[in-house]
Image (tube, rainbow, N blue to C red; front, top):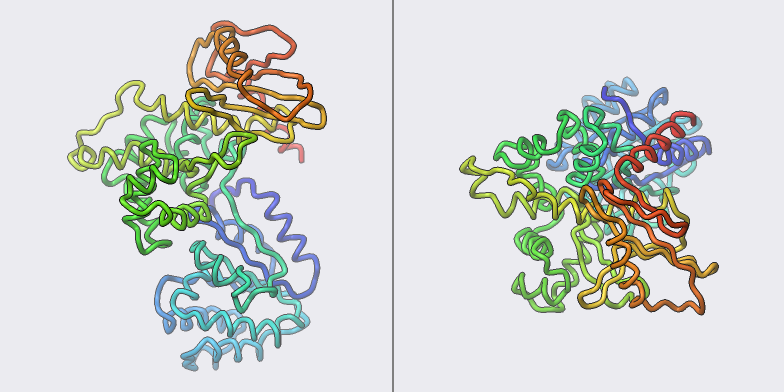
Length: 459
């Protein structure tokens, strides 16, 4: 089995729940490829467990599969032979053979597939918990990748299971410090570039980790019709949505730079108000995010937050014809605008808080002016303004001069404010040596993440 990486917080939560020694009902959910099954397998090591992975098939097959696994675990020949047609029959029998005073781990992985084929399992499971499991020492866990079903049918207040779970865990993408461990064949710059292409999805990082440079990875896995990522967005969206063409059009609109709701609606050919439910669904899945200028929450725009989707719509979707004809190529510098955009996001979402301590971090824009980073400590009256440049040989003095000019346009509700500045780039031709100015290039960031890795190893 491939070496398990990170997820220390999630494992600690599960271990804490296990150590309670009494009945637990845990809901684990997250998008496809995010590593739910691998996390479960790591957690159940050295634990007495029944582990069933559901398939996207009909109820009869699903009951037959889980019945086979349970009967083998308990050595129950009668259960192996008997035909059960309903989930009620299966759980009624299960309560007869599960020991009430023994710590046991029962897992139904991809539980959303069971809901998809038969929603009555929710009320059956509610009764099973209320009348039996709650008084046992069983650690019961369900996980699911269909976030819509998990949110609406398991976690919402309208669900029969509402109020039964003792803990729920949303498994998110890995941060860059953990993602680097998958990319050990690459140098630091290639690791950052690859992370800006696929983000922190473990399955994607495993695939990228087979390569030692980002360009070759992109050409082989995105820009070929037999590449791993060529059809991946279709699989991802078709599992969650019926109106897949509308969602594709909305994502394509955002990729083309239509970031305001009216612009997105016009591009997609739908009424302005009708676009909001689609955007809400995409945000719920973590595929799209809404951001607003710091201090002005009403002036929001929408961006593709998922790195691989952002890259796919900008480079694969637009070049499908040439990819099918096998004539596609990466022109020198063609990826730079994408890396520039994602570098800013990486700095703001991951790097910044590892260096600075501010209460609020965001970005700011107004008309033709924009500042990549604005951070505030209202209690101390401190404000930081920052710029991110995915370029070599940056002249920090020039960037700082423009940044200081733009910062005068940012109106914040401070009586007095102390200002400092942070500049991030691939490399600098000339740095600024002033107390309130901080310059970081890729060499500085590599040292930072090396220190983080050393600290983690000591834990």
